[in-house]
Image 1 (cartoon, rainbow, N blue to C red):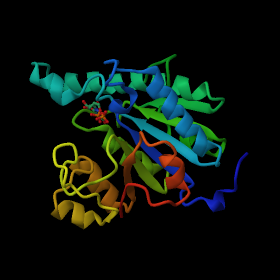
Image 2 (image 1 turned 90 degrees about the vertical axis):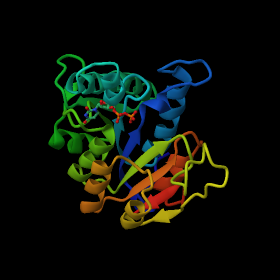
Image 3 (image 1 turned 60 degrees about the vertical axis):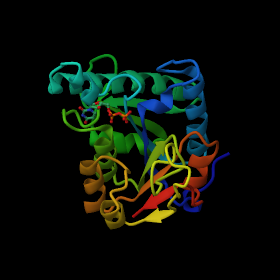
Length: 242
Ligand code: UDP
């Protein structure tokens, strides 16, 4: 059953998924079928509500440029490897979502003929109106950036209502909740507060882009069943930065 868009708080969203969200720490797999299945089910819940969804996929589960640089690979080449890794993740998530009877399109900022479409702003917007989930891979296509920047940039381009950053914790805390049991979760922050308190929301260039173009960001726990659906319906889940 589908519901009308006017019952939604957000009807066009960019979901940023880190590479980590595709993994399973218990069986040491970089790309895990149960993680992909869980994400696909969460995504189906909001597609059934008629939400227009773009996904920006990361690659921390495979390769990050910064880490490869540490083992002696030239940074530009290292970032190329990182970007290509996001396409690998994109292929995996694209395939799982399409198995849920959802139309999908995998776009890449780096042309890869026969494997995915090349990123095209106009085409992406057209696909969204046809209930197709558009997955953006290869970041913005340039080294020295991250997929957080891609999420904010694409959100501005396609005029999304919000960037939803799915993480492994419940939102933005006063300090790292994995290291400090006294860490307190913020429910709302301004862009300025994030900068003043030096809170880790996303990398700085991505964050400044969101701030300058007034794109709200919601950081939430992607592993919580139903969280994505609650957010698009307007429930206060995680931390809102606006
Ligand atoms: N990357 C890049 N340009 C971009 C996006 C990503 O060079 O526009 C590279 C960079 O090396 C990065 C890697 O791809 O470390 C994977 O992206 P990211 O670190 O954002 O993945 P996540 O942490 O979200 O899993």
